[in-house]
Every structure is written in structure tokens, then in C-alpha cells.
Image (cartoon, rainbow, N blue to C red; front, side, top):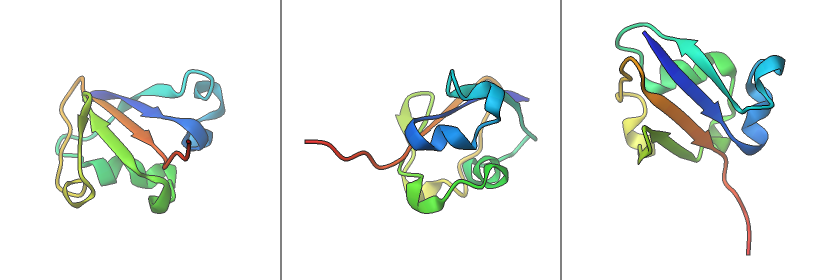
Length: 84
């Protein structure tokens, strides 16, 4: 199965160097892979994994360990962003 994996802002630094400019990459995943299974190999600091969307739909923190992805899904992650 394949998904599109997107990391925004400072999290983009965790993507392979050749994928950082577009902030996204195709990613082959195992059937039944959860959001946390996908995040783990990229060594994202969990305190920076703030906003998680699958196909544009927010996934709350308590569901990320159980939420599996399907072929063609888009997983997008943002860190906390300050502004005003």
C-alpha cells in the first residue's frame, strides 16, 4: 500500500533531504499500519506532533495509535504554531 506523507514547518526537516522542498513524499506502508507506526521511523518528537489529519480529517491524539491507514490516504502533520 502507498500513502502520501506530509510534514509541515519544522517537522519537514525529518523528511529525506530530497523531499523537504515539497514537504511530502510517497510512502509504502504495511497493511494495518497505524499513524504511530508511520511516525516512529521518522523520529518525530511527539511533543511536536500536534495537528494530524488523514485526508483532511483531524485525528485526535488518543486515536493515533489505533487509526489505520488505507491505500491512497494522505497523512499530514503540523507542529504547534504560535501566532497572533
